Length: 207
Image (cartoon, rainbow, N blue to C red; front, side, top):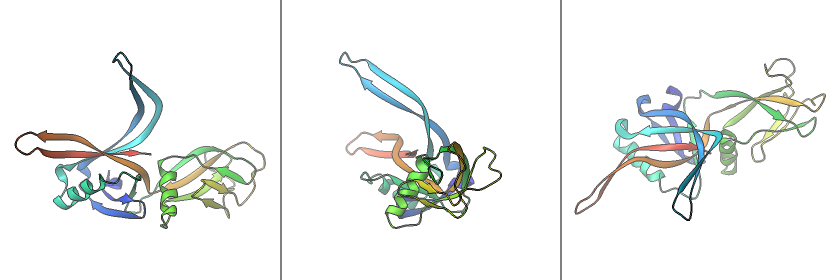
């Protein structure tokens, strides 16, 4: 969890700085679900075979300043938020891609690629680095990306060396965060002359 305990969170390119106790957060995959109530009042729910990263932050270890900063971000509703780690410990993955021709490979859209695109659009540095394109799942042999380029706005990789034939290839890239949507979790409200609301945590759902 140390990778997530020091992070930036906020509007892409204008993030706030957080340095929290690792015990205050939890990361897990969460499935996408859809709910709809029928005319007769019955509630229907569908769960899809797709999951997105979710970070849960509990406020019991937060300082008052961090608590207030998190609360201020709840008012950001016109855009999704940028979540980036601060310690430089990038995460690296390798996934299968399908090139459009021998020199062009579109990367799969996910929370990491969307964040990098949002940062570049805001005039900041991207958060994703392409390390290589290979013709095998092990990531060995010729790196067809060497000398190539990546366009964050479109998610298109231009290769430095053309692939010999059109077939599935494997892209290795590193990233430092996700584009996320924040919501309250575990809210407690006490009624009286003045209603008092206390938020015990927040959920950061990947895009």
